[in-house]
Image (tube, rainbow, N blue to C red):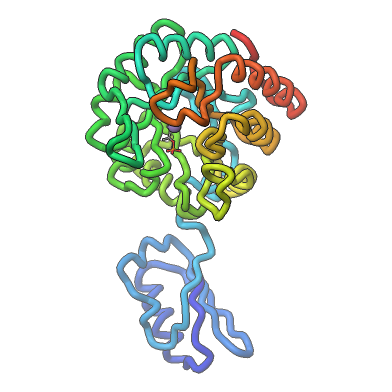
Length: 341
Ligand code: PEP
Ligand code: MN
């Protein structure tokens, strides 16, 4: 970081600050311009924790020069991370496709969805068991029973399973059954949940919140990583804008921006971005073309009868067509996706 001194600051104030920094084991680099003096601070700024340098006489402001998200940022690790979920690698050459219904509704429904998406080439089955609904009167999910049904679908298909965890008290319920935690948009800054999931070391799909900046998102990912869990995959799922034609606005720029700022893989959820089934294929193709490492798509055997997010779920045949397109786009980009099981 650098400390910018006020134009009227005097030499004794500069010396006072330098002495303070040095006493904390930090290096000091003073640069005197015609208008102002700037003090460069060299070393780990953790040493300054709780010390209000900005209140010292003569200081105008403090400017951080490095992101505060050290573990999630590229400075810490310039090469891209590949997250291994029981042998399925996210962030490498191969694209990862996660698909399944918004909510697990019954054994028949989740089994039908699982068999269909597997046939098209998906590697992960998604399905919400604990649903974070806007209204408390809406379907809240099958909870523990939903987790068990996902387990059965995994045993029948060999797909990896991912489901949203809404509270730190649920980690134990999920840990032996689910292959990857999903942290939803509403919980992006639920720091207690992030810490607990971090301690579990299980891979996490970490969605962006509807009003979360990239900086806030990566700082939130830092909470998971700071507990020793580096198995984090980011997921752009649309942000809230003035536009009402879609449920959210897919921020496609999140893909290249995250690639520039972080080594973590990023996938896209076009379903919660668009909110309408008719736009899913187009947004999916665009996301892969933009460099996303994969997709998470809501697929329901009978969307009209879905108990949540009915308007945005696509059918298995629609998903199959999309997977065919994805494999062609992958080839152009020098990536891989195995269409068909
Ligand atoms: C979901 O994936 O079903 C979900 C609720 O998504 P989001 O957290 O992005 O709203
Ligand atoms: Mn949903």
